[in-house]
Amino acid sequence: MKVAFAKRINLTKLMVSGLTSQSAQMSKYGIDTEFVNNLTTMCSELETLNNEQERLKADLKTKTALINDKVKTIDTDYTRAKKLVKIAMPQTQWTEFGVNDKK
Image (cartoon, rainbow, N blue to C red; front, side):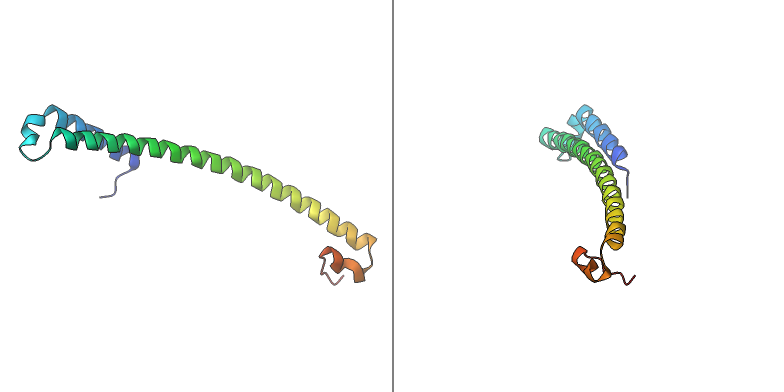
C-alpha cells in the first residue's frame, strides 16, 4: 500500500496514540512501552529528516536559479566575444579563440 508521506506520519501518530491508550490490552500481544517509544522516536526522526530534506530542496532550487542566471550571462558574453573575434581577427586566427567556424 502506497501512502503519502504526510498521511503516513499522521497514521503513525494515531497508531501511537491508540497503542498508548490501550497499552494494557496490547501488551498481551507483545506491544510494550518500549515498542511504542521506538515507534514514536522513529516518527519524530522521520519528521526531522523530512524537514531537512525540504530545506535542502529549497536550497537546491535557489542554487539552480543562480546557476541558470550565470549560464545566461556567460552565453550572452561568449556570443558577443565570438562575434567580435570574428570581426576583429582574420579567420586563420579564430582557432586561437576556440572558434572553429568556417565563415
